[in-house]
Image (tube, rainbow, N blue to C red; front, side, top):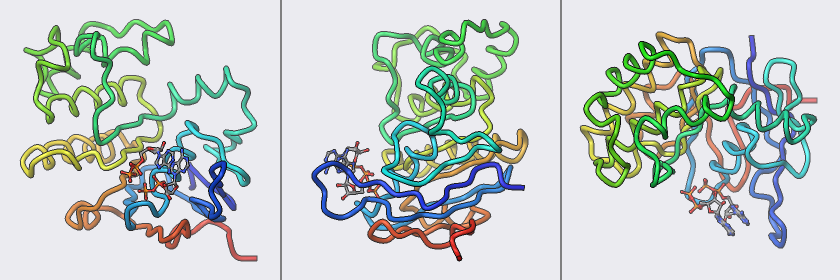
Length: 226
Ligand code: ADP
Ligand code: ADP
């Protein structure tokens, strides 16, 4: 069954003549691992941001199960983003003045939820960050920073994990570690995983590959055919 669907999803940025995303239809099954590929500027990040509720479409809808994401009010939308969506970026987007542990627990803290000590230790250990819990992001390598970002994305056990070129700034060894962590979330915890990538080796691991060219999505499934 589909967990995440997009119907005729369109984004036209103000002042732009051509839509960045043009009537995209998409249905992603619960537990699916989907890769999104396409040239730079084709609309991949735009689609990911709309799916995660971090940007609003010009028209069209996104549904998580039966929730119409953009029908939520701002408060509900903020809660939706914290609890249902884990977002991972190419350049980590950690808060520089917070420690590793503080960055990781931020989405739970914002929800007023205290992570049990054992759960936090387990997550730090899984991510290879036990020794770094009190360190600042500036004291970490790129691969370590991305592991913190994964911890932050997973802390609230979101239904969907959205990653925008998560290995784009990393060497091959770190890339493989990051993908192994994301795939473990997908295969062992059943979290739905959507990854934008330029790496054919990563796309080859996915259950399905979507292609975007000039804002046009292909391979999305969904009910775009009338
Ligand atoms: P990709 O992720 O495939 O590189 P993007 O979704 O980032 O593509 O961008 C798609 C198009 O939308 C590009 O032409 C880009 O310049 C434009 N774009 C992206 N974000 C904005 C924005 N905030 N304002 C105006 N144009 C944007
Ligand atoms: P990528 O190509 O790796 O997806 P970009 O550098 O195109 O990333 O975009 C990064 C962010 O910068 C986008 O998510 C968007 O918010 C902003 N952006 C991109 N293109 C434009 C644009 N033409 N005008 C304004 N903001 C943009």
